[in-house]
Length: 376
View 1 (cartoon, rainbow, N blue to C red):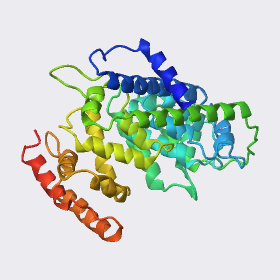
View 2 (view 1 turned 30 degrees about the horizontal axis):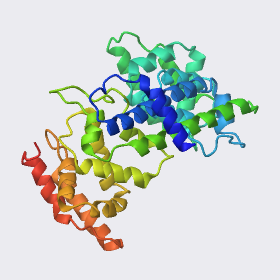
View 3 (view 1 turned 120 degrees about the horizontal axis):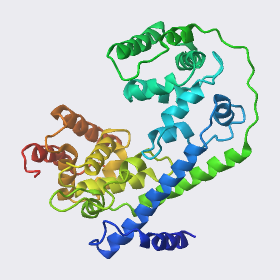
View 4 (view 1 turned 90 degrees about the vertical axis):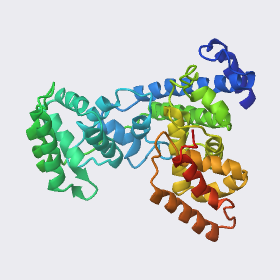
């Protein structure tokens, strides 16, 4: 089935010809599969968005009830919030929050998504959608947002939200928030004694499970066909100002998508990312900069111990190139203290683990190469 699917993918991608006229044959095949999977993900994301619950009760039946029919699958709101292809989710999740039962419904995932969009997103978008709801629905929205596992959040957080939107209104925005009083009323709103009824829509559950299975398969295919040569990766995703952008440059970033995926072999992703970084050029374009960020996260986070055996299988020059890429840029973004912290961490891991890192001096030498301008 795996090979049959690959053949179908290649056949379908005969019609996808733009931007790849000069690619070598092997790279052309890799492009075809990657492009097909990215298109597949976009379509599945659209279908997941269509199946997003309309009310909190429907959402609660899927994720908060005792049955938890989607247990073990990604949370649909959390997934779509991090998707680069799903549009309009803010309006949907605000609508869900306005139907919650005051003081009763609690969901940290939905709350965290709303809070991130409220304070880190586009305020005009949030205000516009809240203004479309009634005053009462806004009261319910704020009550839900302020509700925490052990009751209401601190009064300081409520005052912060009130002051933030009051200041927003004072700045003569195109559309002011109409329901400032709903913020405080939502905070003090008495809990409801209403009971939650359960009627899980099994058809929707089956549909969402099938869609996430599609996503998992597409992510696995993306990882399988992700290049391990920086030259190939740049030819597909890079931007050459002297020639033209790669055929996948305008698509969502593959590496950042795979870094957020829970359905792939994490060690294989680390291996491929480290190989790409070891042949890296100047990270001065979007996809190449994201590759650099991902590699940096791997060697500077909980996955660092997985990196040592992978780096040890490379040559000294490849390790030197790797660290030069990780630390470099048009202007180096990594301070020297961060380099020293990584160096110390690799020393400690070499003492604790069975395999010692063989190229410790490449870390500092690679850093100096990036800073001294030899990177170019």
